Image 1: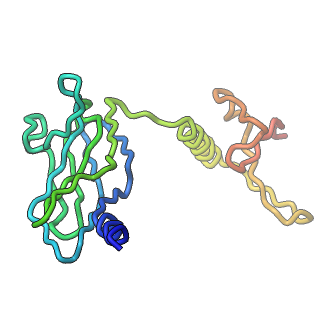
Image 2 (image 1 turned 45 degrees about the vertical axis):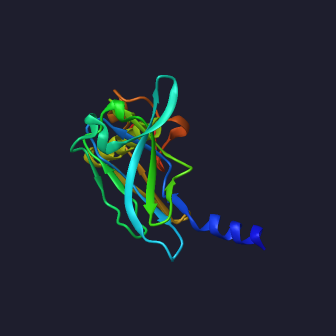
Image 3 (image 1 turned 60 degrees about the vertical axis):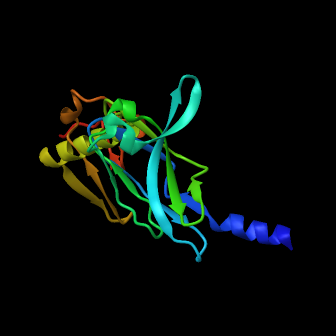
Length: 190
């Protein structure tokens, strides 16, 4: 019976992060959304966020409020009930690291076992899919601007767009003659 009771009590305290990995650009802001739970017969007295730091070869959790580099750059958006969200503003590359939530009830103080990891980069990193999308959009717009004609094939019951091939002179030919569903034609107009 004592074992069951201990299991039940241990399962009541928890901290849950909506997302555990964040990536942001220097100068921007980020919000760590989280919630926490504790037994109904307890009340929360204090909450705090910590950053995990290696100090003298020892991993320590340091309260954000005592770190000078975080002064006026963080805001606790949570409450003393169940919300533990935190906003970090004007992000710097040194902000990269692990963040932990802590709360103290009228009985016990609890640290989050898990952390949130924030990666701050000094430049925007764009995925190659973004460039393909932009290239496709650019080609589509060029096609519209060059007064592309719409051809209807009644027996197939579908329309297709063919652009003037002269517009492709400075652009590479798309793979498989398709750019996001638009047909590329090597034929010249007569």
